[in-house]
Image 1 (cartoon, rainbow, N blue to C red):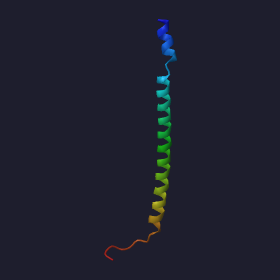
Image 2 (cartoon, rainbow, N blue to C red):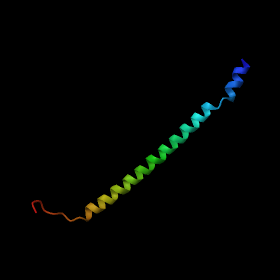
Image 3 (cartoon, rainbow, N blue to C red):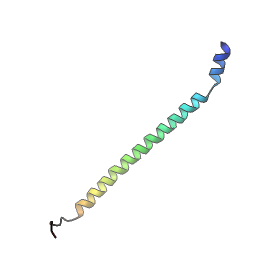
Image 4 (cartoon, helix red, strand yellow):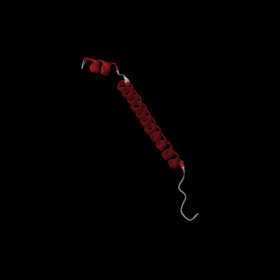
Length: 60
């Protein structure tokens, strides 16, 4: 029984999988934060451009 626990304690494959999962989660958070910031900035830019364009009456 002690050999089973000793072998289990030495096995690091689960820890490696957890580390990769944490890295993937961190990358996902960074991508989401960057995309949100970029989207907000683009929305502001397009609204500024749309506000600067004069209205043209329909039919002309």
